[in-house]
Image (cartoon, rainbow, N blue to C red; front, top):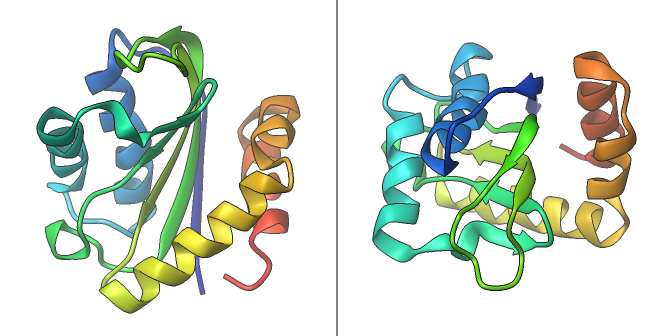
Length: 145
């Protein structure tokens, strides 16, 4: 069972705050430990803005051992876009966060998200009405989760 979390209208001053907020939704839902948001920020600090996958969309994550307690997926829609420093896909207005307790689940969640994104998930999330609409859209997009 996947834990779903959603935040809407997130006010973030810069990418670090946006990443922390998105990952904190997973902490609040019980899917990730307290240190997970900072681990997600370190991923970008150490590896650059590769998590910005397409125009306006970032996939927030860290390694399972850095705080994944359950399989969790969250969506955070920002009140105003932030820059990550990606040459092609900035600014970001939508962040998907995920966590898993182990590497096997990690791969399954990523492949499910990839399928959903190629099927238009980002556009559906942007069009969703409020926090409940975001959560419902995620649940519908990840039926096997």
